[in-house]
Image (cartoon, rainbow, N blue to C red; front, top):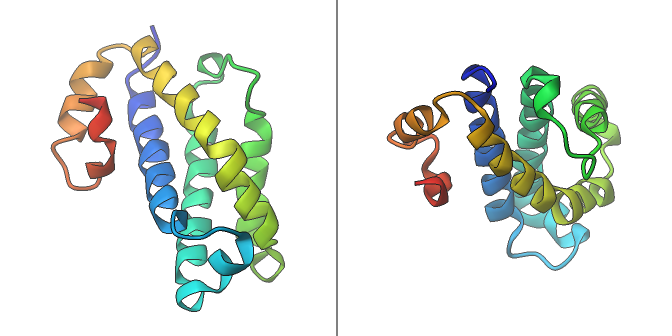
Amino acid sequence: MFDSKNVLYILTMLEAIEKIFIYSADFENEEKFYLANKQLNFNASVNLLIAIGEENKKIDEELKTSNKINWKNLSAMRDKVSHNYRGIDESMVWEIIKDYLPTLKILLIEMLPKIENSELYIKEALKTQYYEELHYLK
């Protein structure tokens, strides 16, 4: 069993993924997503991708057993996006949202039972408004 600190990192990543899905749901392509609401949806999603990459760095490496995601690239994406604000490619962001986040979501959910006392920590976290999009974990 893995340390319970991993639950918080995973839940934060899952909440960020859900919010990105909400912010990007109404758009059929990256250009419309990028330009919508004076880039509000795009910028919010980029900020959440940074959070996902940062939380990924904190998860125990031994817990990241799936090779369906390149875990190192996830953290590298965070560094690239956060240090290259003017050079963020909306196509890359759109591809991450559409092609990688659904798989990452599944893998993160699969990690939770491997963490000591995860049910208790999930139950407590879901009582807060911050994690309101994770209702499927109840």
